[in-house]
Length: 232
Image 1 (cartoon, rainbow, N blue to C red):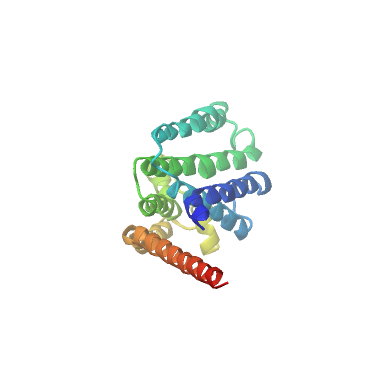
Image 2 (cartoon, one colour):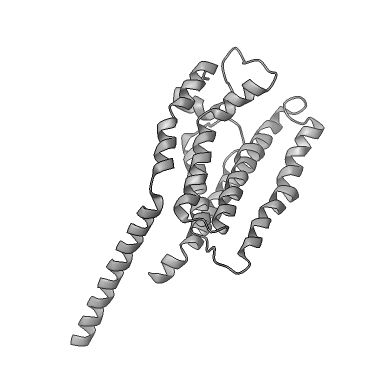
């Protein structure tokens, strides 16, 4: 039990790696959410990776240097790949089939890597598991709320398509159709209660309470076994 408690981050890491590999290799890279369970698998993988970050040991002597590692991922793969599509114009204009690859790189990897990098930096700076999870969840809620979709059509010189926000696929899943600009605003506002719930949730107290109960149960079990052994 002690091993499981101390290595919880490692269990999350292993599950996160398995989930990521499945998402990357088995689920089609396309903007649309064709099957709802694809979204569930991605969210489960996200949760496992976040769990690894939240419970990662942050008392290592040179642990702060680990915060450098995300730069290698960004500069060694993500930015060069995304830049390739931008520089060559190899998205929609010349090769519509590449949209799925570009969309996956940008929204599944780049956006989430920013999320994980910030959360990991906070954790390695001494952040608690609960607050680490809170930072990441608030960012994820903001992403799924439609804030990004609204910002795209607000700050860029583009017109809203007649059919609505046709690229807001995560909203289309809930509504069953492409939302209008006004509907997206309402959709985003509906996330405020969830945002506040996560913001004020006492995650660290919950984790401490769960940990205490597990340790007490394990201690009672150990004492009971010792008593039985002594009687024998």
